[in-house]
Structures are given as C-alpha cells and as structure tokens.
Length: 212
Image 1 (cartoon, rainbow, N blue to C red):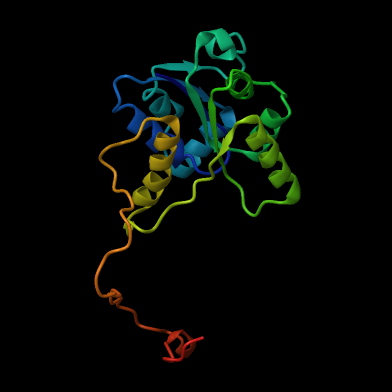
Image 2 (image 1 turned 30 degrees about the vertical axis):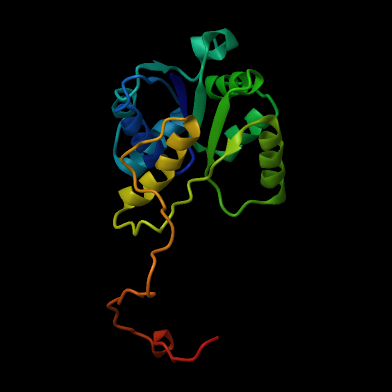
C-alpha cells in the first residue's frame, strides 16, 4: 500500500509524528512525506523535533515545490493520503483546486482518481465559510476527520489522547492496528461510578446533592 502524508503549519504537529511512527510498524506500507516550511517550524515549536526526525520515518520525502514528483500524477497509484494537521488555508486550496504546491496537488490527484483523502482539519470554532468548504470537500469524496479524541479508554497521557485520533486515521486508511482497545459496549451489571479525589477550592465546586 502506498500512502502520502502531507504536513502543514497548523497546530498539532504531534499528529503526523505519531502517525508516521505507527505507519513505520507496518512493513507493507510505503510512505511518501511532504512537509511544508510552516509545518517544519510548527513541528519544532510544539515538539522540539527537526524536519529530519519526521523525514526519517518516511520512505520518500518530496519538497513542497516539487510539482514534478511522482505523487503529483494519477498514474503513480496512491492508495490514500492524509493531511495532518490540515490548515484552513490548505483545506480551502484543495476544495477549489488551487494546486500551488505539492500537498494540494497530491490531494487533488487523490480526489480526481477517487481514492481516499483524509483531512485532519485543525481549527476551532468553525465559521460558515469553513463549514461550507468542508461540505464541498465531503461531497467530492474527502473525509473530514478533525483530531477529536475519545475518552472511553480513560486516557492518562497526552500521547493517549493523540493516539485516540491516530487510531481512527489508521482505520480510515484501511490499516487498522489490531493492538488498540476498541469500544465493546457499556459494562453489564450494577452501575459503578469511580471515586475521584478532589479538594474543592471554591464552595461552588462542591456537589449540593440536588439534581438539575
């Protein structure tokens, strides 16, 4: 399987870092990476990692300006692409076919060839223009997958929260990780509420015992 990972300058550089590490465990997956200069800067600011650290996790890396790269052509045979994180600028460019760089061009190729494009859009809140753009992309076949973690597995670390979203991206790529914990339904039997230690600092935080 051949996968393209595009990394923009939106906040959330830990997501491609974890995604690439997880993909590296799958020997049958060939990874092509395109890292923007803004993405490289955000990677260092948020994680302390250099571009070389990210590139070392991919089989091939391509400069953002290299529109002659293999992944810019539908004949190359890309199975799927993830833009993680996906800035609003890049999302909008993809939606309207403004192929000014390799991330946008590769994404446009994936859409026109009816292959899987997953956009981990990083912004909040969304205004109407964002939502309309996401609707247009969804109608074109893209999957809009903002990194929204699940909490049913009781995450204890930031990495747990990040992996919650990465697990879903792997599922969407058709590369499920058999080792992950999946929701198996609510526990049977008497309802048990875990006790939480807390020391209220404000009287308003104490439970009154009244139901709303």
